[in-house]
Each structure stands twice: as C-alpha cells, then as structure tokens.
Length: 353
Image (cartoon, rainbow, N blue to C red; front, side, top):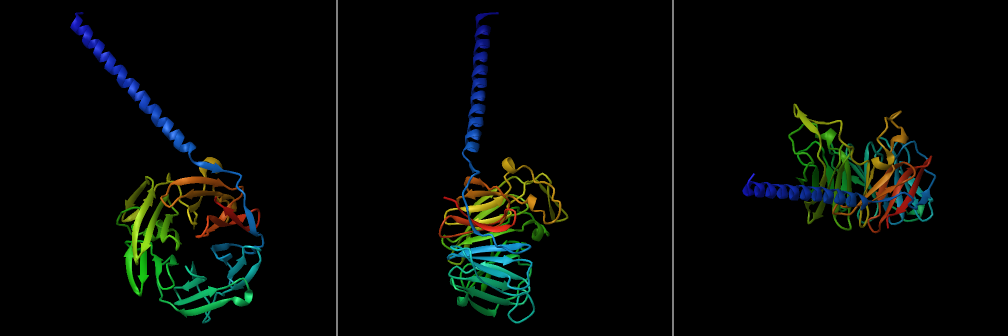
C-alpha cells in the first residue's frame, strides 16, 4: 500500500474518531443536562401545615374559597345550609346559609365564584338567580343580595372577573370562554387540541382559576396534561403561555378518542400571589393510579401539590402524607388551603414560602 493510500486511511480514521468522541460528548452532556433538570425539581416531603378546622361534617365537601380571613366551603350533598363560612384565624364556623329547592331564594344547581372585591357569588343558571353573600367575622353581619341573572345552558364553570363582568366556560363551543362585559358577549381562547370534534364537552373539561391581583386566568384539563395562562385586560383575553405534552389521540367520526397511555391532568387548581398550584399524582412518589374499589374510593386521591410560577415553570413538588380533595389559594399571599383526609375531612393551611 503506497503512502497516499496510507495517508487517506489515516485521515479517515482520525475523522471517524473525532466524530465518535463528539457524539459521546454530546450524549454525555444531554444526559447530564437531563439529570440536572430532574435534580432541579425540589421535592418536599416534610412540609409544615396548620389545621384550620377538623369539624367538616359532610359526606362530600365541595369547592372551597378563601378571602379576607374567611374560608367558604360548599357541602355538595346537602340541601340545607350548603355554604359554610369559617374564620381561618380561629377555625370557628361563623355562619352557614343557602338552601336547595324551588323557592324564590333557593337554588337548583348553584355555581360558586368569589367576588374580586368582597363576598361569594352563587349563580343558578337554570333558575336565572344570582346571590352575593358578604360577611364579616360576625354571624349577624351576613348580607345576601339576590337578583335575577341570565339563564345559560352547557356552562360548567363561571368566574366573576368583576362585579359586572362574568366569564363562562363552555366546553362544547369552538372557543372555551365566553366573556360578558357590559352586557356584550364574545368568545375567546383556544382548545389544547385543534380538531373539528363534537365531543369537546366531554374531553375538554377542566379547572379554571382567576387571580384578580394580576389579572391572570388559568385553564387546566382533567383528562390529559394541558395548562394555559391568559391575561384579562380592558375586556380582552390574550394567551400568555401554554404547557402541553404530546397526546395520543385519534378522531373517529368527529369524536376525539384519547389513547389509554396518556397521563391524567390535574384534579384541583389554586392560584396564589406568585404561584399556580395543581393537585396531581406524583408517580415517582405515589406510584401508578390504582383501580378504585368504589366511585368514592379516597385511597386513589392524589396527595401532591405541583407548584408553578405564572410562566409555567415547575418550581417544586410538595408531597403530603395524606390525600387531598379540594384546593384554593390566597391571591394576596402564597398560602393555599386544602380539604385533606386524615382520616376524616379537615381543612389545612400550607405556606408555600
């Protein structure tokens, strides 16, 4: 073999070695970066909490709301005194009110939403009735203002953006939100999967949260992981950030079919001053979701809080020692409140800082 051939072989070998080394280094850096990213998620398993009340007498506590040292919780299976107001500084119940029925000041299917200023709204879209309940730390201070309200169909959630403006969540429409400003309605927002389907009411159900302090609206789905942050400003809704994963799905006869291998989304949502908090199952700590023994098998409930900033960066995961059922946040601080099961229902407070 002459010198030219030897030289060509030598150069080819050097190039091959450099390529292999570069590939190994790239792979190494990728693995290190993945490891660093995983290590960067702080998991907290010994978080301190305080018990607000261990006297939650209900077969199924519904939604909870916090405002100005008062926590409202909804008894979802009762027909009398369905709303309970607690003083979070003492844990004592201040008052309970609201009945289910067909009377002029009773509700058939109330939807609950905080007033950005003061109080809790109860809106019955079937009866066309609205009540604003306001209270101080005195049972005699309860004031309930009733008025007529427009009837709506196929609305699964609503939020009072102000005392005059209302946002409806309509999962069967081409866009998720209907914003009513000064009596004028318009559609806004986008769905996580852009397909022409007829079963959006089933697959796009999710949790809504609104922080009146920073005007941020958060929508997150139940059936699969997806979260969007919007800004509400001057009567307009603009998308700020989305967090989505690859979803296995198909469209059959205009119906969206989700693959069995997809992860589930959140079960509860809470907004604080700095954080978006999602109640989800932490697979690495809690394991895979077991098959429920009954429709109300509490052993399958998640016990982990995924804490994001408003840019949807995951900051930490809080692994609680017991299951959690409901969640709400304080928009003026970074405290969250939860209905926990330990082993009975109780309301706890967690300071995320």
